[in-house]
Amino acid sequence: MVLHLYIDWLSQPCRAVAMLLMDNNIEHQVHEVSFMKKETQSAAYKEVNPAGKLPSIVDDDFHLGESHTIMRYLCTSRNLPDHYYPNDIKQRAKVDYWLDWHHLNLRHGSLCLIKANFFGPIKQLPQQTIDELRKEGDNVLKVALGFMDETLGKNNYIAGGNQISIADIALICEVTALPVAGASCEDYPNVQAWLKRTSTEIKSWDQVNMVFNQLLASRKK
Image: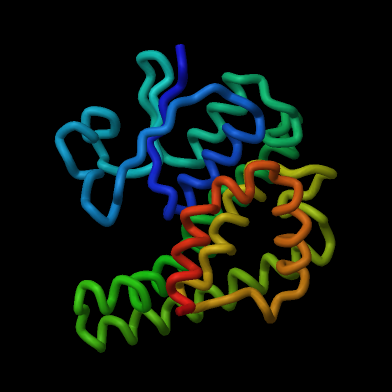
C-alpha cells in the first residue's frame, strides 16, 4: 500500500516529514491541504486527522499525526538508516531530547513571532497583543538559538553523532522559517555553519522548500 502524506508546503513540520520520505525514497502520495484556507478544519480532513492538524499520514489503515511521531514511526516501520533515529538507547534519547525541546523552545519562539509579524496584520490583532507576542518570541528565540549555538560548537549535529538525525531535520526546517517570523540566526555562527552543512546533505532540500522559498521571495519585494 502507498503511504499518503497530507501536507501544507509552507509548514515547517510538514517539510520535515517530506524530507525524510523523499531522501529515503519511500513511496508516498502527497495530498496538499491549505492551513490558510482552513482546509484542515473540513469534515473530510478531520476523517484523516480528527485534531485538524498537519502533517498527517495514512499508512494502510493506520492514521498518524504530529511530525516528530511520524518521523519516529517512519524510521522504525521502514527500517531507515540508524543515524536518523539510533537503536542505541542513549543516542536515541539524545535525539528524543531535542525533538521534545523543539516544541517549547525554538518552535515556541518562532511561532510567537510568526503570529505577531505575519498573522498579526492579516488578522488585525490589537497592537498590544502583537507587542506582547514579539517580546515573548524575541526572548525565547534568543535563549533557544544561544543554546543551539553552544551545543553546535561542540558537535556537528544537534544530537551528537556523526550523521544527520531526525532532530536535525526538524530543527533545520524551523530555523529556515525564521525570516518569515522577522528573525534570523545571523548572530549564531555555529547554527549558521550547521544550517549550511546539513542543508547540503538533505537531497530533497531544494524540492521540498520550493513553495516556501517562493513565499520568502515574495515578501522581499
